[in-house]
Length: 251
Image 1 (spheres, rainbow, N blue to C red):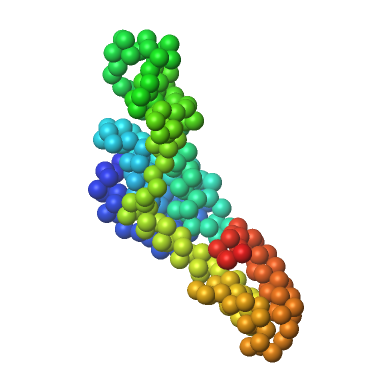
Image 2: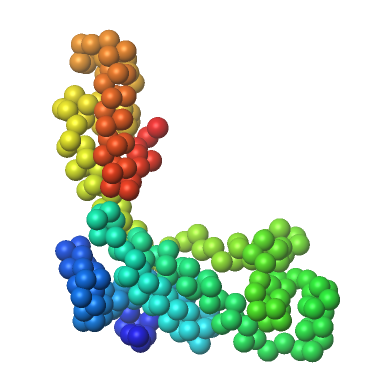
């Protein structure tokens, strides 16, 4: 198991798509450990940034990051190169699964008084620390249970982090670039008129109406609608063949 500190993980250089595919292929086909090391080191930032979202305790963060690295290894085993997705997108789910599964046992190492222990057992603890006491006593938390009577906040709300840190933002940018390239590739399979109408109707900053396009092309509104419908159907099939949908387009 690779043991990288947070700082070291964040300083690891990213690898190209081709290097990523090569490392995955070498690991899956011949169990090349050097390839696995390259893959894990270049994506270790995902494990650390996810771990830091779930705890502000340095000891817990290290333990959770280790679990996240196990998730990366699982992702390396299961990743399907034929589907065309980025490894980071797929690995995020496995990292999150391993970290959240380990969270109860990691966070359970909490010192509480005997009185709090008894009150927790009797379900008499309230306030913002209720979920921590419950985790310490029972080793798990009810994510739907309220932890703040005034605001109706649940434990799940505390696990969610609406703001992306720089590492998550970099991953998101990479994913968006991949989706844009994929969309451009699939759009190239359409006819020139289908592509023109879909861009003007769905992808333009200010989408045009059927009437505006029909006038500029010298055809009826119904004909524009037919071409758009046919093009969208073809585009949808092309994207779905690569495990993506047309949700990135304006509906």
